[in-house]
Length: 96
Image (cartoon, rainbow, N blue to C red; front, side):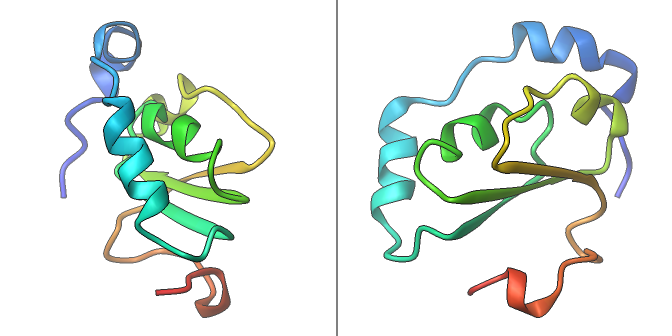
């Protein structure tokens, strides 16, 4: 997969529309387990920040280190630069 957003990471963080609150609520209500959630392709972390309000921890991954550089930091969000197809997560971290 190609990193297409590093060159415009600051602009992306400033101008990207937010996710609808109804979507966040739907995602949070759709699962019983509220321990860990994985935000694949987190970009600048907009979804991760909202999910962090409902889950104990958020694993947020993206191919672009620049995107993650502009992501809002929270104590329960763990950002990492990696592809969805090859993560460094232990099996115990992900409850599927």
